[in-house]
Image (cartoon, rainbow, N blue to C red; front, side, top):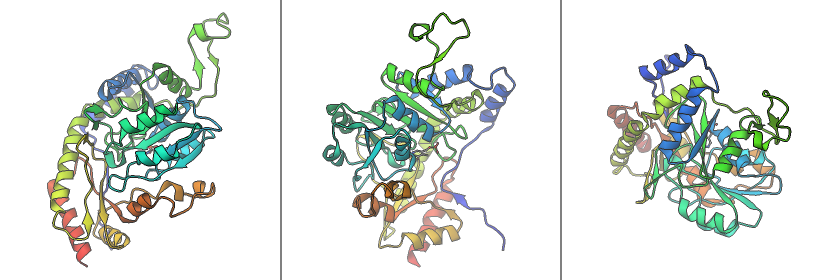
Length: 380
Ligand SMILES: *Cc1c(COP(=O)(O)O)cnc(C)c1O
């Protein structure tokens, strides 16, 4: 049998000038920790409206850094959503924190502020939201609840760079915002990520954590007279540095983000319009006060038919995906006492969710083909 190429649910858009930008850095003096890192971080900060962004090697690394910068440690609690990629929760486990899941809003699948309000305690260090599919969470309410308890907000914006919430860019609203530049995301550096922080001291802590914990400011050194070569480590850190080579790709991609977003918005509208008369599905909702960057198109397949429709679409060459297995179903969290059935909104969403192909390079014709294949799969 001839293998048919599968239309993927997400993929990168790499153009000749992206390749040129990377090649130019490869020909230069700095492969890593040079001027292109600084340029990328400054451009990101300007784009997302944050005083500082620290680049890093993945969205998972970004979450680890954000929690570390927020001071999360043993005995602390991190409240988060089950409707996410597991890293939002597991990165807090890495620092010894207890993860408290709370349920999502039934329509957006974003963390429910009322559930956060009910669960927050004096041990809560962070409330971590996810902008599911690119639709920002209720950030103002989450900030208010967290700050009233002395906690910080972390926004996992792996899906939503370029989006706005009440007219403010994602990256300028939560205390810390994390990004992923994995190839399926809204822009890519192959592997990569970033952390935006509103407080400069927290941003510096995030930077030092991802840079082995090295302190290079003489005023803060315990032994400042050791010599010109001297640097000190005051607390544990990792090496999550994103090299100049990949920052060059990031800079080049960032300049295209508005165009990528506009195309994703068009595709979103085409799917929603095309699915309007299809029985047995519910298209995603959009709140009035947000302007999403659509990383996913999460259609809901009703009447218990998701698995059947998934298999049928894959058979027809449409690389649909399911995002995500509820995070508390992973054995890591099951072994901490979480059980299936605990978060009915998230679990029902998971049972119905199907991600249709969504990336800027899709043609209108391909979008229409996906809609037709879905119609056919449902009428079987
Ligand atoms: C992709 C993703 C991550 C992790 O990013 P990586 O760059 O793959 O490590 C974290 N959270 C969410 C919601 C994601 O979609």
